[in-house]
Length: 193
Ligand code: HEC
Image (tube, rainbow, N blue to C red; front, side, top):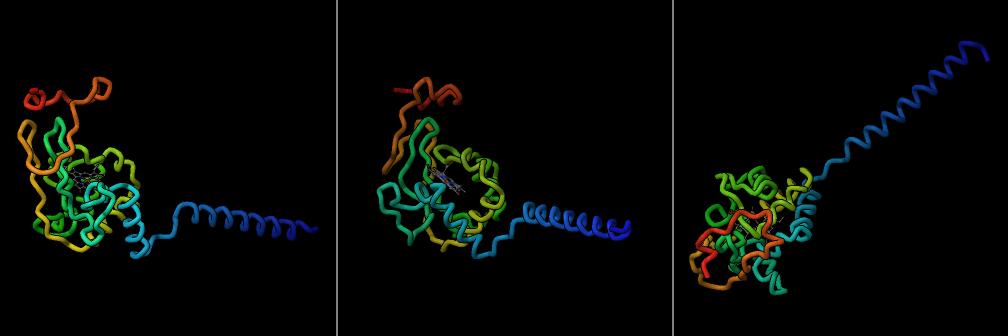
């Protein structure tokens, strides 16, 4: 083989190798973007697998989620040292739901436990679990939440610790010492007999 043919062959082989590496890098770094329909489908799946419907869709905890009132809030109260909370109406109704929130507001709320006005999301809203969600999944879920039919449902207001709630509540006793190690001290009113 002549020197020129040898270098030409080597150059061609090197270019092919570089092209292959470049191709595999491109495919590894940039997964194909989801279409809008795929994004909403992913968000819908996550709303079920992440348990949002358990608490935010009426009937789910009684074995019969009402999918005609998806994510419109539940009037089953959760009582604990934090008072009584109700899973809010997440539909895009502007007055009783979260229609005025942007996708960023929604993602920030379920990943950091803060509403746009900075008030904290109290238990049992399990935002520390959702803090683990990737950007792609979190924004797919937020887009899905914004796409459900708006439903007018003014849920019950949160009840502060020590005050009495009317209606159905699920009451947590004060936590056993093992579970309480990382908790703030219970508010004085809640620790009365
Ligand atoms: C175990 C029950 C439970 C689960 C599961 C749950 N939530 Fe919640 N969520 C709540 C409760 C209770 C509140 C009200 C907390 C409060 O009053 O501070 C709440 C509040 C919220 C709020 C604030 C709404 C507002 O108007 O202030 C958002 C947003 C939210 N949840 C999104 C989600 C999403 C998204 C999921 C699923 C990924 C989810 N939640 C799963 C119980 C739950």
